[in-house]
Length: 205
Image (cartoon, rainbow, N blue to C red; front, side, top):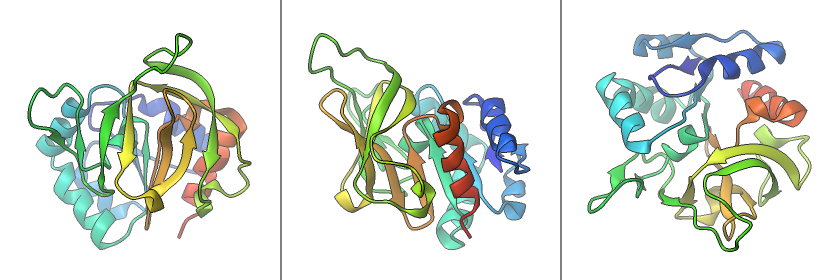
């Protein structure tokens, strides 16, 4: 199931999964979580707007039951990965914006370290693996994936960091905790290797 909470390009994710040979549905109805074997949380745009939409439409409580209590596999993509964090500094002057808090950590602004680096970070960049959960099986180290983002998720614990990418001083490009996974890049736009990740995720029991 792909969550439709009004943020993100859902059809491209759905099409990519169908190319992998799987059936998947898009829904804006929280009750559909009860029949989902796997859940994908996509997203583009602002952290605060995304969290407000999740709250207003009842997704926060519903996801808490299915993902935390019943361990239904969850994959956050791009902004969807950032929403897994505890807080975000995006657009904040004083108090930080609270996230889903599934993986402790903070979302921070990318800061260029040289004249060649630009924010937002757009294009293909390598990922270096720190660990290899099943979702990344058959993916070689230093594989390129497609990124579009201005913020990055900084987990509190290194044990939740799956991969890093050398851009703007380096950032975490994938996370995992139990049955929860997040990728900062777009697997649906990352050719064969991106499709392999989606397939691996949907094979998780």
